[in-house]
Image 1 (spheres, rainbow, N blue to C red):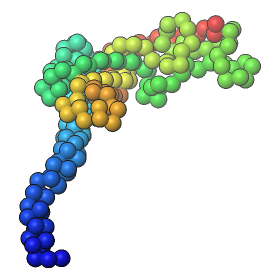
Image 2: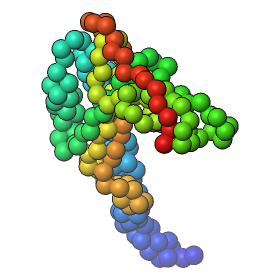
Image 3: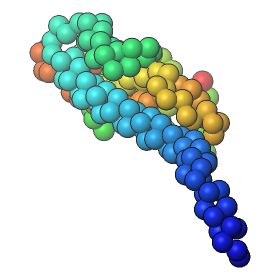
Image 4: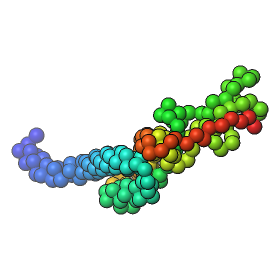
Length: 195
C-alpha cells in the first residue's frame, strides 16, 4: 500500500465512531429501558406485597371497614402506578388447612367425583358441593381469610411490545390471616347430597 493510500484510509476512519454508535445505540437503549421496566415492576410488586400485608392485618380487627382498607391499599399503589386497576377478593375459611380445599364428600362409587345423590359436607353453607369450601367475604371471628389483590397498570417503558408482550403489566398477591377472636366462630357447615 502506498503512502497516499494509507493517508486516505486514515481519513476514512474519522467517522467510524459515529457510525458504530449509531449501530449500537438502539440495542443499548432497548436494554436500558428493559432494565428500567423490570426494576419498576419489581419495586411495584414489593410495595404491593407490603401494603397487602398491612391491609390484611388491619382487616382482621373487629369492626374493620374493608372498603376503607381497600381504598387505602389503592392509594398506596396509585402513588407509584397512577393508572393502576385493582381488584380485591376475600374468602373466609374455618381453618388455615381449609384454604382452597374442596368440600368433603362420600365417594360411594369410587370415581373421584361428587355424583348425584352422594352425601357431602356443605362447609360454606351454600347448599351445593364446591371445589372451594370457602365463603366469599371477610368472614367472622376466628375465620382464616384469604385476601387476594390483583393489580394491572400500563408499563412505563413498553419495550415488551417489541417482543410481543402486552403494554399492561398484571401482578397478583395474596395472604392468609386469622380474624381476631372477638366472638364465637360462626358455624356454617351442614350436609347435603350431590346433584
